[in-house]
View 1 (cartoon, rainbow, N blue to C red):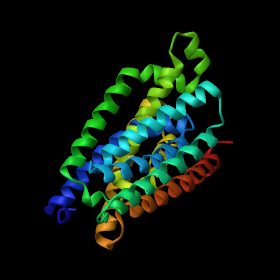
View 2: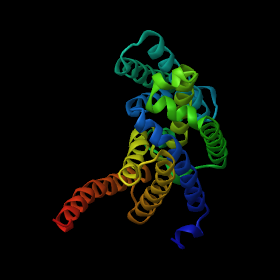
View 3: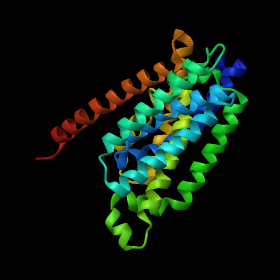
View 4: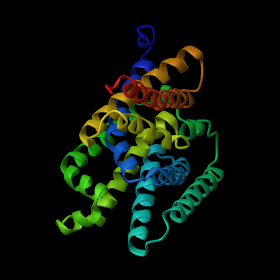
Length: 276
């Protein structure tokens, strides 16, 4: 660990990982509770269109991804609420349209586009100062939004009808939650890429949910678990000379499987030790 921190790009990577863990901790449990896993995946793939457009216009790719992610999140939520269209249909349309637009814009972009793969599969070691500034800004937005709207988010997540009766503007809160998911997607793109975003949205929150049973505690635990997974995967990728994003995901899968196995074993031992 000390050897790794001697390099500036590694210190930058660990800092970015910590910021990403905070975003995952706040948004991941809400994604799991609201069963938005594949919606988050649809938003992340739709963001590819923004990356392609940003390359075409010469902008920062994450800014393009943010615009497309927010636009697709609001569009998906609005259509679903108004027309009650099947969510999987909307996800498929956004997924395909975003990816197709991204490919077309990249085809129209002259010159070398070697940095593109880092946005598809992540490149935590290549985080720049501009990337960090954008991640910090999105983290601040996510933290403030969750703090200010915590009760409304909880109400909508667990019982929309009750929330509506209590005067909560359910549709607006739902759309705001999707916008926060879009912000978190952009934060995650630099770590694991838009292809693997779903994994980090779900696994840390799922592990925390097996240990803690209140939402605040799950959010804190999810942040800490995410930090552990990202740090462990980053260290493994450094010493094994492997792709950072893929290594983080594989390490996360290993820890998640261990959590799944440990829980039944603990339950069976508790039953054996219980007094007759």
